[in-house]
Length: 435
Image (cartoon, rainbow, N blue to C red):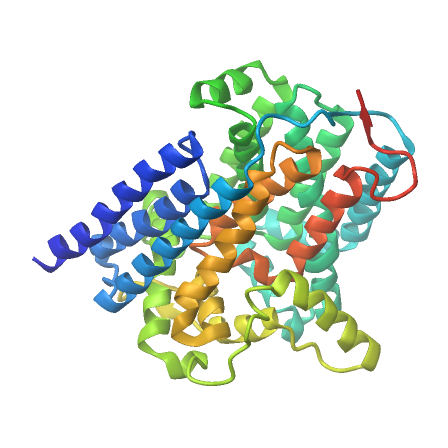
């Protein structure tokens, strides 16, 4: 009976929000449908208790429903208020200009910077020690085997954002049938370098999501997406196949347990964050949710953390940005099942609650919905806004795992997208020349 009640509580609002989102956005894949599917869909699966996973409490389900409702409401209002009609006359095409060269040089410098670390990790990876490489990367501040703390932070804040932003730009060009092979290949190399340096599948997953969202944003119907993929360059098709196969391979090397199949691992990865959030809500003292609120530093982390980085470097203080505070709490492992544990999947709601307490489940999603939908409503303006929309929808997709806008990496991705995709951001010759 409890499972039935939980199911109805989740599924009825889900289908209502999905129907409303189709009517407002005129397209099935939109900020509300993505957010609702990721949150309510996997909350529903978690509430079924499959594979011995713990069932979230009614309190946690209520928090998720309330946050989804406010995210959806503010999304509808913002999109209808700010949506642009048709495409701007300011269209762009890729040209072999000085700025194009700067983007390629930036990627090459980043690749060269990573090479010494990849040289150290490759022997371990070929020996099958993927878990060990991942452990070395995530614990660089105490282990100092592959990376030291400063080197790991440079990767997270600067090097990886270069590759991710370049991938987004490349994905945009592909959807506009203006594929730049040089840019495409350099972005693929960058993503592979991230995988080799960190033993993580996340970079490949991001790459796939960027391309899928690029096709979706620049298509009016689902059938148009399939048509564009079918008509795309053979390199794109090979990239998709390679990324999927490689992710499956990495997952086999980094399984949550020796006794779990690939399908079981996928189930735990998608439902585990709901259980982690449930543990946070049921144990607020362990996660400092009764005091020391951040008052927006986490919600606006992509803006506040770069200033905190600069302050810590300028005055020689230890870095204490909102992202560092949040991750210090969510590093602790908790049980998803009696035998399966996980950490660092606190969802977007924990940073919102760390900012504003219980009211964070309303305030945080409302602010986040405004940011996402303001960008999405302007995706037709020019290339920069289109690329930024790809990135913002990606953050919505990942919000069930973590709040991507918490991290300084987001600031650097947005900055690179603006520098190389904006309209006359500086006085040098543009990559994107008016047709």
